[in-house]
Length: 540
Ligand code: KIV
Ligand code: ZN
Image (cartoon, rainbow, N blue to C red):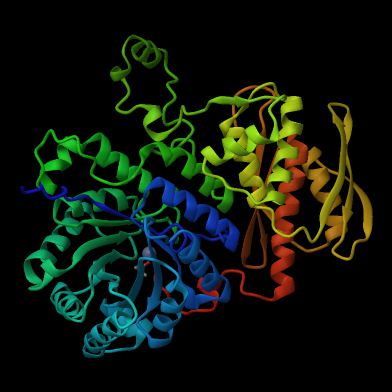
């Protein structure tokens, strides 16, 4: 009997942990990267680009751990980026070696601008290096991806030649980056079509696309690329990434989910096929977005498509009336389809440790005993203040714990006094890295300002607060407030996060969290943004 072959799907290649982490201030530590990688696996991405192993020891360690712990046989492919040099490729291969399905992604620029000013190499040299390095990568792994950086501004004829040679040398995916976000949708579609029509061995590789959002066109460009034969999309959660970011995963996936009848024929399917176009579990989208936002400190704008706070909110009376009469009047997708309403009330103040552990497990969090103890204590504190503890509250606690960098300075106590006739005054007690307990106080323009000034008097590391935001995890006056801040020290940005039902305490925790990251980086003297500092000329 002939079994029908599985219908073709769009491969989702997530680069949140590589290109996404290149967003200024989005630097993640190894544990945070692992937490995100695990969630990406639950989301169902096909490939996780876990980092750029040659860039720094921290990146190497993160890729290696993700390869070992998330790159299991039934998990996603784990990919590492490498410039087209032997050293980069060897380092990537080593970091990826624990993965069941490792992929090396090697790249070299092909545009004349990059060749002349950045690489100082001739076209002929690039024509030789690309296949040589693909073959070298192939000597370590079967799965090799090749990118001609700045393909969008490269001479197409030259691009075809480079791609043909890369495929002949063993590249199984060829990725077409619009590195500077310059192309329009029709131009990008034409570029992919040109590659399909003019690279003789193109049928031996999957065509992938990668693009930046400088003109706000990345998602539109990718969808046009799909129509013209692209089968892998490189994207990030919330669209984070270098400069204006990358194409947003959630927008691409939901566009192809909601409009599958439109896209089906381009994948050779019957128009009305209900077969999903990607392997993504759309119910995990909202949760993943929140996790990435809180760990990177990159907030999601309220009107952001799919995952913004207002994406499913109807403000005008006419819209509300219409939606009450029939959802389809103003809604093209269901909030439930991205997991937005999976907000169950599960635990309360009488719930025990076992129920807590079990629910966390169901949500996909496996905590070590010590972490579980800390999280459980926080849950109990919360349950005392708040009658109903939801899954989102639990996630806020676990995510907040995951972000705790070693507490070099520890907040022991914070007290504020303020009011409409009082000058906001804060007292803090901090424990220093040497174990000394120091107390200080300050007056500020508001309670948070007073707390931050008091903390600064103890910690004394010059910095500038450039972003401060409070969001509530659930509705209601007793909700947990999540505070996210970004501060600047020299040219570097550090994010901090705190979660508490008292937003002054959450604000103090967020500030300490960012200061501890800053302090740790000064102590180790390690690059604050390895991908930018230690490796010149990495792609965007
Ligand atoms: O934007 C870009 O060109 C990149 C490459 C490394 C793929 O990120
Ligand atoms: Zn990029």
